[in-house]
Image 1: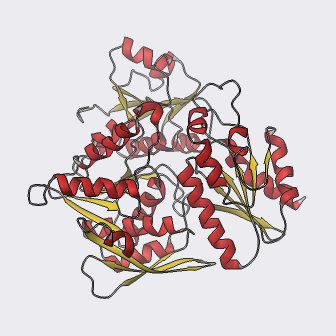
Image 2 (image 1 turned 90 degrees about the horizontal axis):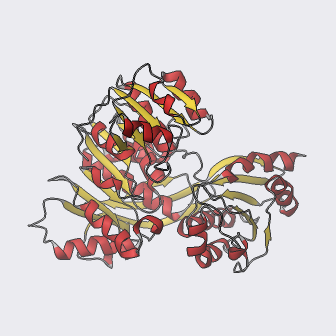
Image 3 (image 1 turned 90 degrees about the vertical axis):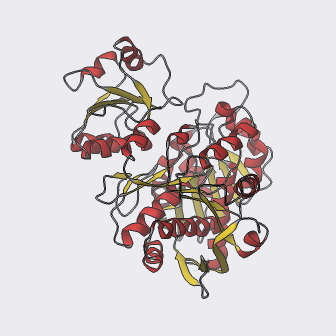
Length: 481
């Protein structure tokens, strides 16, 4: 897709989504007229209206003229919005270009130094850490994130600096529209097979993404993940460094770096120390003789890796490493990423967006580390599977991940864009879980079910990409009652 898109009047279908609303914020800040539609009202839509957008609830061809005249372009998510949507049909009837969010984002990055965070998991957290670190270093980057920074309370910003930090979403291959100066790949593990069809096709799109790095730029790869390590090794072997117009740098624990000698090390993590307040590690960046201390308040070894990637990427852009490290130490998280909601009677409730087995493993491992550090309590996982296709494909893996908890409460599958599959519900996971579990198909009854399971010292995590996020505060209210 060409980046020569007329962004003077932009209509966005599904404008309330995390990614779309961020783009809308930046467009408004740059002076575009922005209209849009969504199926329901939300806080993000209220904020967009306050910023100057015109947003209608419900989809109709008439929405295209909500700004007084037809838009110059219509933006949609091809995965989430069906092609027979009346606004898309009206756009085609009026010869208005219909483009993806990624195409608009690519145009917004023109004349900016793009710092992009890609990977199957961890994009939002790593992007958010990168923004916080750069801001602490005195920079004002533009950014677009798939979640809201807790401190900033926003998911996007039109900055005054020349750097643009953004998630690079691989789910439909659209991140191939970008031209990053620094591109991070946190991990590569098969997902979105409903789009890609095969694991090979999914892995291949990351190789193509590496080829999007600009001349003189850097591909930064996590060596602790088998998939991203294989990507770096394959690229390093197939294209000699003196023939490649971009650099490949790896980061990770010392053992992982030593297992991939063909990949140049940009950051080596040593001496991990877990405390109730978070994690502290020593990291050697580039050719440092002495390690630097990296402190991460968000629990989990995966968050240490994400933080290391954020600092390494910022340093490659030219920011001061010590100031970047200060920004990470002060980073207090992203909404729906191990987000603390409160405590009642020494029962602590968190919410997390994890919806892939590896993500569930990471968040429950982090919870287990926190419980062990405090010396008491159990982990209670309240999980809502997301998509029938993903549930069926990864039932064994979800069961293994959830078995890291002490107790599991399984909600019904959140179908999102998919229709129900006859005979398939969350029990396809539960039947394989190796710890005590309950099937809770009645959504409103879940808070009471959970409260009956808890005792002082326990950590409750509501986990999933759907409506389960509404339950964390309800569980707290039930505990108070």
